Length: 125
Image (cartoon, rainbow, N blue to C red; front, top):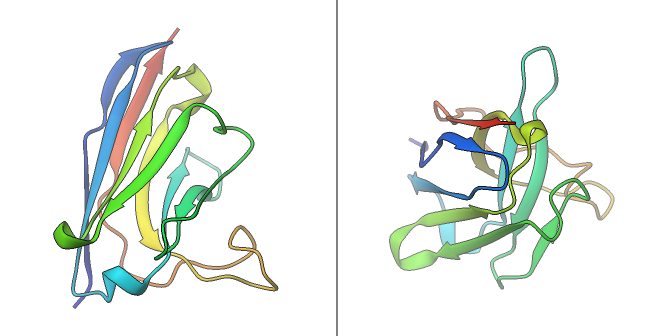
């Protein structure tokens, strides 16, 4: 059974930093491309960053240059370092393995149907 547990969110002022963690159990973690998603009320969940099994990374334009994704396969954990946070980064953040569609992970779907509880990030102005 897949279990995804996110942590590390909180309330921070604009310009601040947070580091999110996601522990993935019951998955083939080391061979999966892992991603961080975020969701705000009334909007679809969006992929903001992903990291391949070979540690190649990619970021949505909205977070490029400010966020950094990394992984520790020995700990089945993926991280998201968030710097220079903006109020528009306020969201619930989730992790999942990602699949690609026509060569694009942003067009693909999350691998697992069972999402974790997410971790709330709130950035005040």
